[in-house]
Amino acid sequence: MRKKQWTALILMCLALLLTACGGQEGGKETVAEEPLKIETEGGNTGKEKTEPQPAGAENSAGGTESREAEGKNPSTDTGDGEVTGRFEIFEVTQDGLLAYGIDNTYPGLCSIGHGNILANQDGETIELSALVPGLVVELTWNGAVEESYPAQFSYSALKLTGESGNPEFLLYLQLLQDLAKTDPGLNEGITESYFDFTSVASLSEGEKEGLAYLGGTYFGGFGSQSTQEELATQGILDREKGIENGILVTIEELSNQNGKVTCNAEKYRSGTGAYYFHDVTAEYKDGEWKYEIGAEMIS
Image 1 (tube, one colour):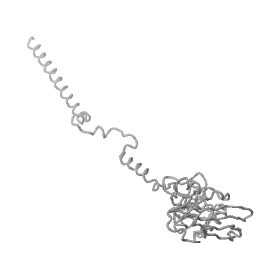
Image 2: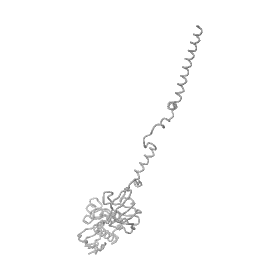
Image 3: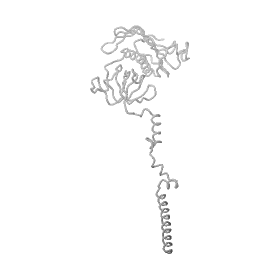
Image 4: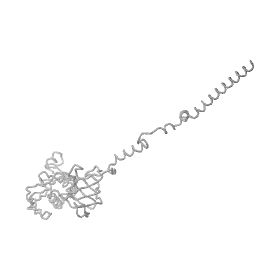
């Protein structure tokens, strides 16, 4: 009887021992199957790859470079949309326009490259020859403008508005051309040309700026607006010697009624170097100006 009890006790102990060993092996297998723990201990960055990334994190360095490049070269950034504005044309060439922005889209003097689409008020295609100084047009472009003087951009589409600027602009443009051709020796050696339009009431400020810029091309020096008093204050004009490297052109508008204008025009280098168009009478008829000069004087 005692022998049977010992035998049962031994079998029970063996069973308990086998159960304990099996539990330890299972625990080891469970640990071995944890991939996160193995990666951490081994220094693997696999954990970082499996974590979700914030939107836009991919190629973040490349995105920064792209934004910086866009900021440095805005003229090549076409953007998603386009802008439209009205401009008064001052000059037309095969390469582009000289025009002035007359609304808040881009006010100022601009040198504008031609686009492919030109249309009249009804949307019908027109030729480049239909564009003349004085017309007000609607331009569409990508909004990028090169910061220069004049500012620069190219339009993608141009449309006539049926509007025009002040016709007197064309009169004074013609007058400046003729004055530049008369006694051309006075123009020699100049690097700057100055224009006084303070008494020309018929032109807008934008038209005066465009007239001064174009006038500079006629006289051979950069054109800007200034008066004799301002030039003297700046030390550019000497009351006795005149202007050494520049010329001052003054237009005095005397009257302007019903398409008839009277004015005087002068170009001045010094007291002994000047030329005058005195008592100019002009008439606007059939879209063009014709004028006569009462007297021409030289000093």
